[in-house]
Image (cartoon, rainbow, N blue to C red; front, top):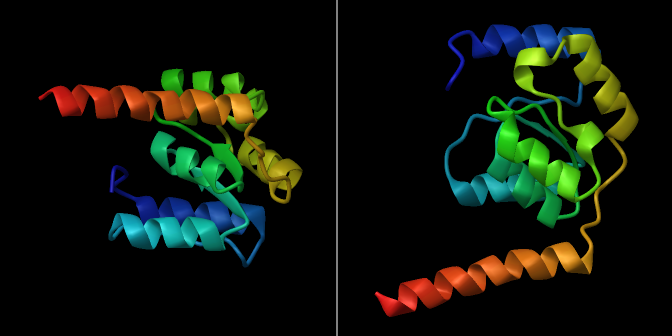
Length: 131
């Protein structure tokens, strides 16, 4: 964990949100994480790539990034910038408001965004094939 008092913070957050359907996931492996994301309705994450997987699966995502530059840029590119709040500036009240507003509003990525992301895979594949 990147946070020493992770369990205490989670318990305080859960108390403030007053919702029994909030769970803290402790990472084990990527397949388990992807399955959990696919099973979930709303993802609250500080991790860019967790958000990317959730976006691709059409989930509702709220991002509270530790390093907000790239993450904020991504959410702005998909016209969902309000769903991204830097962890350093976030309060439990603000996070609660985002959860209330977006918990049941999934994100549908445009074909244009999906095509652009596939282009990156093509570049990577081309580069790797040259090695």
